[in-house]
Length: 192
Ligand code: URA
Ligand code: SF4
Image (cartoon, rainbow, N blue to C red; front, side, top):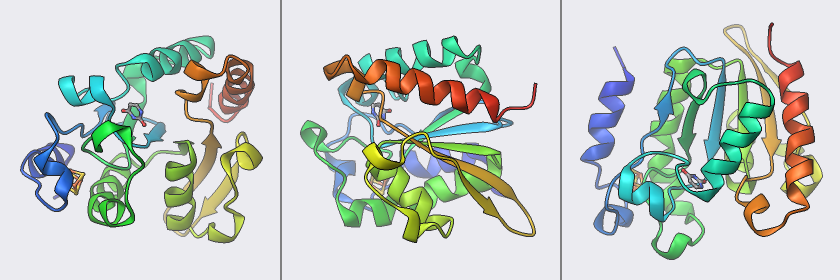
C-alpha cells in the first residue's frame, strides 16, 4: 500500500530531474494525513530548501495568518507543492520538471483524499485543474481566484479553489484583503 512515508523516502532519493543536483533538502509536504483541505503551492523557496518544511518563510507567514483568520490550524491541513525541490533563484518550474515531479503530488492527493484543494498561484491552479478535467476553465489567477470548481466522480467529490499565491501579498499590500476575502469563502466550504 502506498503511504506518505513511502513518498518521503522516494522523494529524498529522487533523481528524476536536474533539481536534485542543486537542492539542499527536498520539501515533500507537511500536515495531517486526514486533512480535509489540501494546499498546493509552486515549489520550495530558499527557506524551505534550507529546512525541508513547506511555506516556512515570508509567504508561509502570510499563509499562517490567513489560516488563523478562519480558525484553521496548519496541523489540520496538508501543504504540498507542485515541485519538491527548489528551482535555482526561485525561477518558474519547467514543464519537464512538473512532468517528472507531479506523480508524487498525485499520490499525496490519493492518500489524503482532501475534500477541498486550494491551488496557490498559476502553476498549481493549472496543474490541478487540468488533472481534474477542468482544463477548459483554466484562466490566469487574477481571473479565477476565489472561484470554486466541482470535481465529481463515482469515488470522490472535490472542490477546487484557485487562490493567489500568498507570496503575492509580500510584495503587493493590496493582495492581502483579496486573499482574506477568498479565505472567508473557503471557510464556508467546510463542515462545522
Ligand atoms: N512558495 C511555495 O510555492 N511553496 C513553498 O513551500 C514556499 C514558498
Ligand atoms: Fe525528483 Fe521532483 Fe526533486 Fe525533480 S523536483 S528531483 S522530480 S523530487
